[in-house]
Image (cartoon, rainbow, N blue to C red; front, side):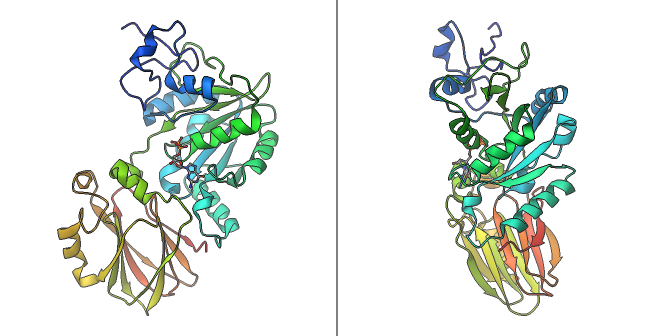
Length: 366
Ligand code: GDP
């Protein structure tokens, strides 16, 4: 087949993978002006849809941002900061400023300290080498913080384009669909490719006569927990409503399993409370430390699930790290899953998580 490019975004048209850039159903190939499905939906329904590409392709295409002047809005999932923060972003985009947007705050318990969360996001970004001009907390789904953000973006962009970047599943499409509602009228919002002749897959939503919001495809980060579980289990581990903390009073030598995806051993310390913030559907199992290894061996994939028997094959083995809780109430964060808040000063815990999914520790948010 001769290569055809989408009239909207410039992505190379393909008919095999609906989740990748440039997809269009075979039946549309007969049309005169071919659009990929993403551009078609944007044009006719004013709605963006996710597509994804690999890290390398992304690097190549987003590097074109380097050569332009724009504001980069990096959307991340506050439940998966490590998995959704694009550490290579500064290299990719050059000197353009970055605004960090933490999405999905509607899932946090009401009592969450937002200021502390903002601080933590800022420090996580900094640690990863990503310097940000500002941090905002929003819920694309419920609309919290969207208006404030839209106003502030107007200032930050100072007449330039806005590039929206993020890994898959952070809620980038939901966010852009909100922005479209906030900023555009009734007109068809899609315009033609910003970088003609290249297979970019960027789509543009005009802000005014000169500038646009530019949606870039989501990057797949292989280390995100969601890639290790089935689609059904993604629904289970991803919180879909406000998290209800589950409290366990543990003595030392007790263990908690979070499905079969992560584990926490309370090794040493006085009895203390372990407050678990995970999707309300994720099963948590308490057991004695001495039985924990055998339980995992025999029951990961059934009693300790997700993963299931099939996705277990893809799950990297669990690796351990040890933490000693000092002074303040501390959160042990399992990227993509949730966190456990521990009050007991002096407690020692061992945390198990799939190799490559990096645990982090912070001052408690709640
Ligand atoms: P994308 O892959 O980054 O474009 O992500 P989507 O916009 O498709 O969203 C991924 C999932 O997260 C969907 O199930 C959305 O409903 C959900 N989601 C997006 N934004 C929010 C939010 O602010 N709060 C909650 N609770 N869920 C959200």
